[in-house]
Image 1: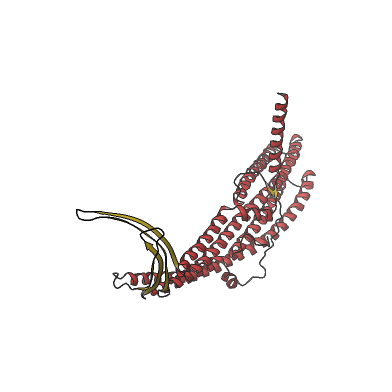
Image 2 (image 1 turned 90 degrees about the vertical axis):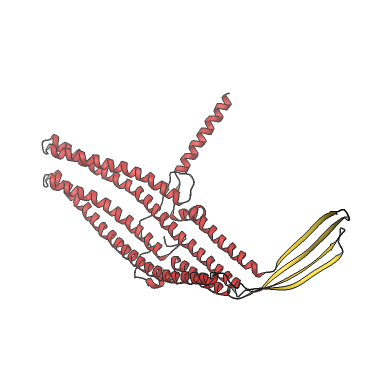
Length: 425
C-alpha cells in the first residue's frame, strides 16, 4: 500500500516537472521556422498538391506507351434439341497490345501541359510558404512584443506607484490638493490594468504562434530575439526585377503555358487517330489449348460530325488562354504596386524607430530633471504630471515603433515572395 502511494507521488511529481519544463520552452526564430516547415498543415497540403500534379502527368504520359493486356477464359456449352445433343468446352489464353501511333499531337501537348501544371503547383507551394512565413513571423513578433510590453508596463506601474507615494507625502504635508492625489491613484490603477491586459495579450500571442508552428497542442512558450531590422531594403532595389521571381507571377505564367498546350491539344482533335494492335494466344477444347491464334492490325478513326463539339472546345481553350494572359499582366502590375507599398512602409517604420528612440531619451532626461524640480517645489504638479505622462507614452511608443518596424520588414519579405526559409531574419 505504501509503495503504491510512493509510486503515485513520484508520477505526479514527474508530470508536474515535465509540465514545468515544457512551460519554460524558449524558441528562437530559426526554431520556429524548423518546426513550422515540418508540421504546418498548409505546407503539407501544398506539398500533396504538387504530388497530385506529378501523378497527373504520369497518368497522361502513360497513354504514349504500349497498353498490354493478358487474358484467359474457359467456357462450357450444351445444346439439347430433339435432333442434336451436344456439349463442349473451350479454353483460350493470350496477350494483346495497343500502341498509339498518331493523334494530332494531342497526348504530347497534354503531357507538356501537365508539366506546366507541376510548375504551377510548385509555385503555389512557394506562395503558401510566403504566407506561412508572414503569419509565423507576425506571431513571433507579437509574442516578442508582448513579452517586452510586460516589462515596459511593469516599469510604468513602478513609475506610477512612486509618483503616488510622492504625492501622498506631499498631500499629507498639505503641499498638494486632493485632486492631485486622486489623479495619481487613477494613473496607478490605469497602469495596473495595462499590466494585466499585457499578460492576457501574452497568452493570446502564445496561442497564435502555437498555431503557426503547426503544433497540435497548446504549450506556454516564450521566444528569444531582438527588435533589429535586418532587411532594410536600402538602397531601394529594382522592383520590376523582384516581381519576375514572385511565386504568384510564376504560378500564373505556368498556368498560361499549360493553357497554350491545351489549346494545341484541342486543335489536334481535328486530326485522325491511328493506333496499332497486335495479339497472340492459344485456344482449344482441352487444357492446355494447343491451337495458335494471332492478329495484327491498324485502327484509324476520325469523328465526322459531333454537333460542333470540337469547335466549341477550341473556342473555350482560346478564351481561357486569353484570360490567363490578362491575369498575368494584372498580377505583375499588382505585385509591383505591393512591393512599392511594402518598401515605403518599411522605410517609414525604420525611421520612426529612430525618432521615437530620440524622443524616449529626451523624455527620460526631462523626467529626471522634473522629478527633482517638483520635489524641491520649483515645478508645479500640473506641469510635472504632464512630463510623467509623456515619459509613459514615450516608453510605449518606442516599443510599438520597434514592433511595427519588424512587422513592416515581414510584409516587405512577403511582398518579395520569399519563402519560410528566408535567411536574413
